[in-house]
Image (tube, rainbow, N blue to C red; front, side, top):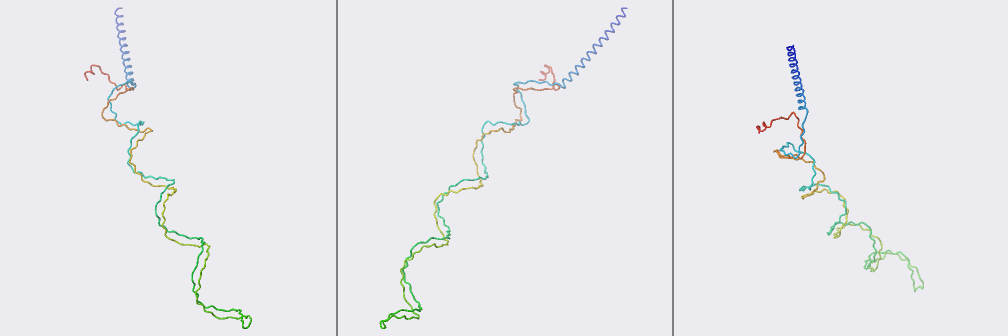
Length: 249
């Protein structure tokens, strides 16, 4: 009897040991699967504050910047422009002008002309008339017909004052020299094409934000992370013992 019970106890002990081993192996396998899943899918986030580091930024930084001061600009250019002009211009003139004066019109003429001259008269006058003559011998007046040609050769004195009051039409062209000394007020409306040379310094305020490109140095530069978060996948991490790290250093 004791032999039977002893053999059975040994059988149950061996089975229990195998069961424990199987459970342990299952737990190890499940833990390995869970660890593999965590390593592949879980990330570690490290919070960084005031952390110094050395970094290289391979690309230029693009952004918009607000300019806080005025920009000093030097311009040395020639600008072509069209200037509209609409104003009154004062033009002083002090010069002698030689011009052609053309006149065509009526001039009122009112005057007295004193004519004193001698007019020679030399001609033959035909006479055909009747003359009444008193004949004392006959004691009566008779009508005597006269017919013939009478030659006249004499000088007739003339002393007359002739009044003239009429319009006289004049049409003539004559050169005239005129001296002009005055200021002309003329309206000026025009578009003037101008070439304006500019060589000056300007102090220009920049009111709007501008697109900026910051060229980063190609050598490592020291920087400080004031506040940030570093996300690390667990699959990229390697665990080492402190002694191994010291030996590696």
